[in-house]
Length: 233
Ligand code: CA
Image (tube, rainbow, N blue to C red):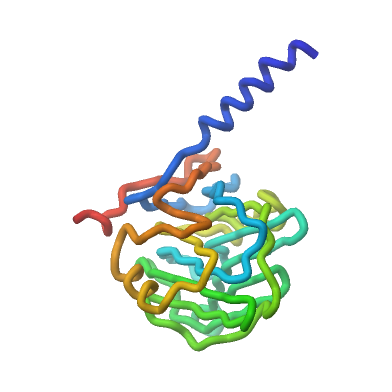
């Protein structure tokens, strides 16, 4: 047994060195699809469950196909909280999944232009609203009375079909993404509008882009973290 101790020790060191802290002023470019999954995993603040949330991010992609910009799975549930984009009849469709519950919205096509996208939901009413560039969609209802379970794995760049596994290359996000933040409450309309117009917005209390501990899984070197030119004053 003794010979295994150095190996275990080295493995622990490796895990720690793979972690980075904070992405303030940074943007992530996910290169074209490769054989290997590549993603950024957020080691978010722990939560037991969410009964309300606001998820915001900026992203752009030239791919007109289905992909997942944000994927959160728990051991019990695939798509415990998952953002989904697809194209239908020449327009875009953005969906939020709460395991098997979902709400989908017809939106303009996602293009090469960076867009600020937010999603808010609260369990008590089930009201779901998307915000694109600070303007909201109509309201829909999903997962009323439900919750989002804690203890899962949250990542961007791939769609998990199991916890950090079973990635399908055809559902990979290829494009640029920044300012991913997740709050445990519904932000006000004024806050969402302000964050859509500015840079360095206050971070979320579950995921804070400015300080989030993250791991870049990128065996084929398809992920590049760059300075965010939008944030240069
Ligand atoms: Ca999938």
